[in-house]
Structure formats: structure tokens, C-alpha cells
Amino acid sequence: MATRPEKTTKDIPGVIAPPPLIYLGGLGLGFLLEVLLPGGSFPGHLGHVVGAACLLLGLGLVSWWASSFRRADTPMPPYEETTALVTDGPYRLTRNPGYLSFTLIYLAIALLADAPWALLPLPVVLVLIDRGVIAREEVYLERRFGDDYLSLRARTRRWI
Image (cartoon, rainbow, N blue to C red; front, top):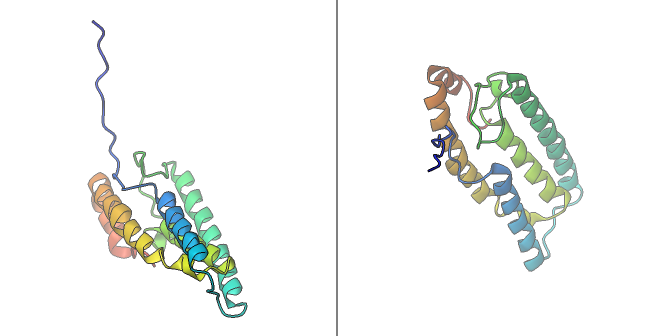
């Protein structure tokens, strides 16, 4: 009789879904609303100016965030075990630079596409990210890194 190796469980945060998919799902729902409820528009060129600023900030922040993870040699996806607590780079300003950058990019897409209805699902997206992702990651990071994480948490805001 063949024996199977013992299964080991990964120590991961157990988030409800991949965060980029949560943002994309909200954006997709928002654009569906645009098709079903046409007629909305942002005033003048304000949407494009603010959208471009959000896009530049979001892309810059996502790049800074990713490079911080690469320097720490720890995986970014929440479905892999974290090997290091990242505390430098954007983590000096916010404990969640990735989700902040995704939010800015979401805003940018809606504004640049002149799609105000696409903003309607964003609060739901942010609640899902906050409760279904960030809250679970915080429990995980405290369990994994203890006082080091609690110190980061005490000195750095959750969002901004």
C-alpha cells in the first residue's frame, strides 16, 4: 500500500478573495451600472485632472509598495506565507499601501472614463477590503510577528 506524505497547512491570513479581484469586481459592477443608468457625467475637465492625479499617485504607490516587498524578499500575495514584516518605504506612512494604491487606481479609472456610476460600488469594495482582507491580515501579522507588528501598528495608520 502506498503512503501519502502528510499534508502541511500554510500559515496564511485567509482573506475572503484576492484583493485585486475585489476591486475589479466592484469596478465591473460600476461599469454595468453605467450601461444601465446612462447620463451621468463629471463637471468639465475636473474629472480628468483629478483622475490623472489619482492614476499617477496610484501607480507610483503600487511601484513603491512592490519594490519594498522585493527588497524584503517576502511574497506579496496573501495566499503565500509572509517571511518578513515590511516596515520601510510606504509602510512608514500607511500599513496598507497596496490597497490604498488600488483605491486610487479605481478612482482614476472611473474619473478618466467619465463614469460616475462606477464610483457607487466603491464603498462596498472598501468595506470588503477592510473587513474581509485587512482585518484578517492584521490578525495573521500579529500572530506571526508579535511585538514587531504591534509596534508598526502603533506608529502607522491603517489607511492614511
